[in-house]
Amino acid sequence: MNTGATPSLNLEGTLFTDTKAPAQAGRVDRYQEAPAEAAAPSGIATVSAGELASPLQRRLSPASPPATIPVRMPKVSILVPTYNYARYLRETIESVLNQDFEDFELIIVDDCSSDNSHEVIAHYAAQDGRIRYQINAKNLGMVANWNYCLSLAKGEYIKFLFGDDTLADRQALTKMVRMLEENPSAVLAVSARNILDEHSQVIEIMDHLGTNGVQLGQDVIVRCLESNANLIGEPSVVLMRKCDTARGFNPSYRQLTDLEMWFHLLEKGNAIYTSEPLCSFRKHPQQQTEVNKVQQIGEKEQLVLLTEFYKRPWVKTPERRKLLFSQLYWLRKNAKKGQGCSELEHRLASCLGDGWYAWLYFLHKLCRPAQNLQRFYYKRILRRPVK
Image (cartoon, rainbow, N blue to C red; front, side, top):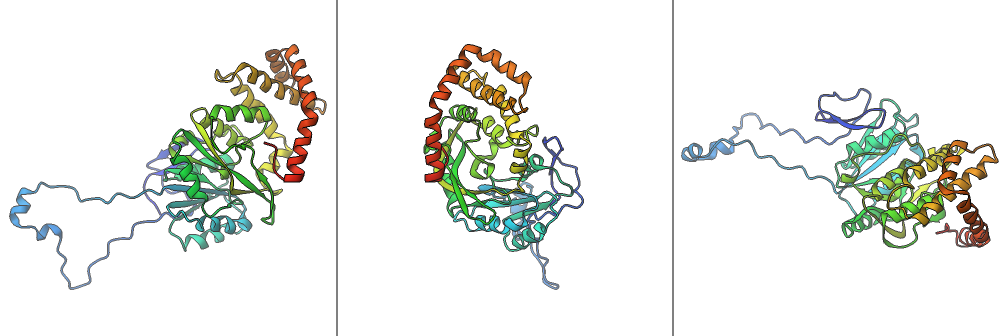
């Protein structure tokens, strides 16, 4: 077990280091320890380097501490937070081990699963020294576990990969590292992603950002808010620098935790995008995203994000009006189903004004048939999302 400073995490999601905390009971830790120095065989005298030096050299040489060999940090930390995904973990781990990029550490943190995830992880960890894993003594929850994974990372770059997702390309790490290294203004390297079903069959390709190359961070934020969608994608499709992740994920969000993090980063830098699907994201009924959809958590958090970002000084007035209209339109549409939020609706309406709402509503209805036709063409014929 590693007995040095251990990163700790409170249940509010705050990252900190406790240099005196003992190892947590009930947690399995496969940190690689340096082997102890072998003892000399019995009967053979050992001679230190100092004893080989001449008496004069020993008198003239000042005392100095023994030389230490610096530990080389991995280039990429691949973080796999997982919970009850034993049936998918083999595919996830093997997609990492099959990469042509080898300078990585693979950190797997199991959030107190009740299936045989531990056996699957231990099997691979015993075969590859780059794998480190921990079993949480109690369930931390999704966001807290993500932040705990971050606290364990030692690499220059961070690559999340959920326990039911995979790297879709053998050169995924090579390509994404190159994207960030060749574009220092970018804080996120993002790719298109395959959507998998429960049987690992590709059912769709998500290519929301569309244009290859560098995209201005603030423009991406506005596009996400206008479309009421996470156009970037899940943590599994992103590579970021560790130095940019010090804040961690915001624990006050449950569904749009990743999108709020992307906004936090994109206010400081740009995104670099490739339409080549380098990762695969799995959809199945048990995942947290599907549970949150039933509870409409994402829609509520989208409104929270809007109210936080639409007043930013870099959001131009026409864009601000479009953002307000899109959210106000959604609120009033859902109010008919008994799902509206009257307080927030009144606040947005007062910011936009009745005249602007009426004009933008007219334009929305005018353009709707063409938008529906485009959506049908992409999803039913090309089987790709609308860009």
